[in-house]
Image (cartoon, rainbow, N blue to C red; front, top):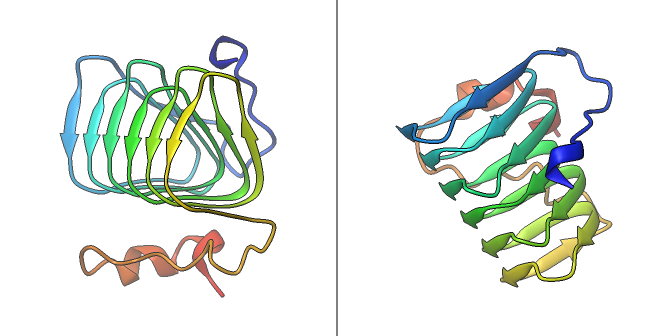
Length: 141
């Protein structure tokens, strides 16, 4: 599934790629699409679509319109529209999304809330980040 990645329409057609071998500590924000194949220790905010590749490791919250997870994620995941857990994904954390797709073989340990999107925009601040969040349209009430 990850090899046939197709992004829907977005405000920005650009894709930010964090390649294998890259390690980042801190918060990441993107107005376009983002693909992670490296390691992230921190929260990721994306106004469009996010893909966590099969070899990726993320320890932090994920927030995007549509999220596809193929690697290992520890943290709360908020997908405004759809969350896809690929067959090789390993997610330890709570899910808030409108639509959830779990492929056979995916591992998930946590709570899940689907359909009602009121929880999706409720980011739990780990740092003083309200200034950044107020600029992202998917986090406004």
